[in-house]
Image (tube, rainbow, N blue to C red):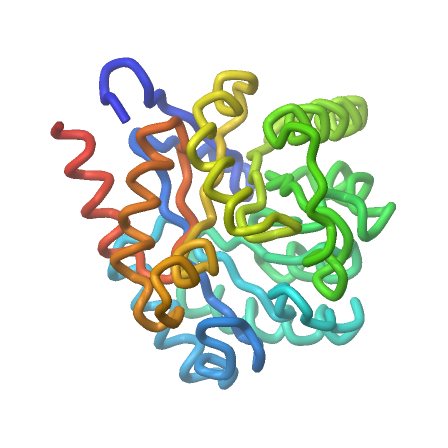
Length: 282
């Protein structure tokens, strides 16, 4: 990331307030699930959730990204209704404790997306890219909120086998172009893109995608999100566990930022922010 030529300011509209990012943004992950691949079950009570949210903000997270249903490969998603109930309760508590925080909701269904925004969330982070629920795009348009469009194939239960690509950058570019056209036709323009590291891609394909991320970034003006934190593309080649994958996360986040990513989604905001600050100096 060259501070003079690569990174440019960008903004989102959060609850009718324009938020400008003058450096790459840090999304802090808040999983209130029992079965997430790294921290499942750690933050599934009101107090542990609030404590972790406060810690994320204190460590430099610009956005809290809350998820109530695990999307790890092989996971079975909650029903939209059950997911909505969990999110509404959690977001109500978060909003009371952190009235000024930007809260993103990690969901692929329109019912919990709407419920979460109405409960106080600011933006929708959709791993399904509108494919899991044909009401998602229309719901985002009605709610008039920022939207993260992620690339994947299949569902978390099946996506491990969905790994045939002619050319990974061409495939993602076609997907994003098609979906952006659909979003724009509905009047949705506040969109970030997520190439979906770890979703329907082998370890080698994930590394090819990261290596060529600058190609993808050059094709789109929308901010690109790098969600690499502690994923299998880090811990499998190193023969370690997700618990020991922080160093690898920092290394690959650095690569992503230097190749044009403008948002990093992480479990550990403090080292991510330190990485960004040092890259801006260099």
